[in-house]
Image (cartoon, rainbow, N blue to C red):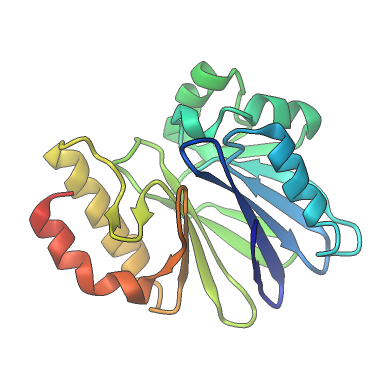
Length: 217
């Protein structure tokens, strides 16, 4: 289990399944409001993640469950978690049908680019990153300390953008969105928390953008 301690929020995450999916829990330290991101698998592991957050605020409480995209490996526990925590659910508007077909969960709030969620006074912005799936969403916040964080789902990893299955149009769409909507907007110190594997920063990845474009993946 990992954690990122900021002035306003604590972000905890754990890796689940043989695909090493990251499940994230954002807790507002003042209000206790929590957003769970990607109920990927392993309900007991998610329950342990939630238990570990009990000291992150006086009265922590899950108020929302967000999904980065519709792929099955990111939503295997979604139905069970929504049943246990019947709160507002969020996902990209264009992935809502796929999520419903795969998990049986009807997302309550479909997100478009620029839509906002709030945890206390912290704004979490939906960033539409088209290409890995039609409705892939990154979730971005800036703590009052000035620290930006992007939960990038499967759209941005250390070493490249997400899988677009050798489709040139999908790759162009994704690399363009990642470049314009993340790299052009956020500074180098931005922490990137991806859907699988290790965290990184935009500063670590920025020098490689042209290489990614040239190789086409």
